[in-house]
Structure formats: structure tokens, C-alpha cells
Amino acid sequence: MLGWPDGDEFVGTAQAEDTQTGRLWCAAEATARALEQSVNHKIALRVTGVRAILEAETWIIVVTLLSGRALSEAQELVGSCLVGERSERSAALSVLKATNRLMSKVISSRPS
Image (cartoon, rainbow, N blue to C red; front, side, top):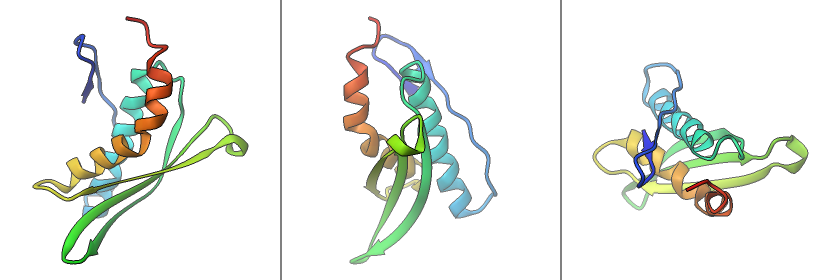
């Protein structure tokens, strides 16, 4: 669930296999759906990859996305987050980090 300070809340949903990879994918996909809702679908997001990577004895979640209504105008985005207590939460945070600049462009047009 994502929320605005004014109390608006947005819930994205997704389904995948009940595996570690599936749970990471679900968290990333659901976050992307909630982000789209939060800006009245002014953006379109497609999760293209979710990976847990072990680097220098530290687990990192990396998420890749495409943003754009048509493939010809698609912008590639990438976000990452150190894995905390819950890797699914880290996948969601990776999506938020990947879309941070994109969201800042459309957020100013959101009605108050």
C-alpha cells in the first residue's frame, strides 16, 4: 500500500509463484500498479526484471522497469536497495527508487 500525506491510499496487486523470486516479482509489480494509480495512470510501468544479488557479502535487490505508453517511447529505469529484514519490502523500495525522478515530474500535476 502506498499513501499520500493527505490520506489517499493506493493498493497494487500481483500474482506469481510462491517462490523467493515470485515473491520479489509480486512486490515489485504490486508497487508499480500502486504508483500508476497514485497519479491517475499518467505513467505506465512494466517490471522487466527483479534480482537478488550477493555483492561483497551484502544482498541487494535490483529491479528494472520500462516506463512509457508505447515501446518506442519506453524509458528504462533501474533501482536497487539493500535487503533488510524482508526482501519483498526491499523489492518495493527498489521500484520506488527507480521511479523517483519520473514520479517527481508528474506529481506536481496531481490535484491537491
